[in-house]
Amino acid sequence: MRKELEERLIDFSILIFEISKSVDKEYFGNYLINQLLRSTASAALNYGEAQSAETKKDFIHKIGVVLKELRESDVNLKILKKAKIIEEGDKMHKALDESHQLVSIFYRTVQTARKKQ
Image (cartoon, rainbow, N blue to C red):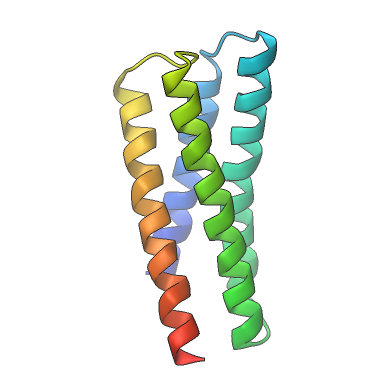
């Protein structure tokens, strides 16, 4: 399960990179897509770091950071869509769907870990 989640986070980050290639590089679009690239990559990188957490508390904190970055990515995608900076298409639909699923998974992960603490 851990490897599968890691792969999903990596694939999500790469999907966003692919989408970023089609974004008009005007100021607002450039600002948002650069932030989106950072937050999706950060989620994957922090998940990797969480795998070597030293304590349960450390794990919860690091998984919480993953959730925070994923929520930021989700809102960013919604802004990009609503502002029509990224056109509707298969990749955008896939990115929004994966973003929602990952937020849900990591929200539940944080909740479960806190209950077990």
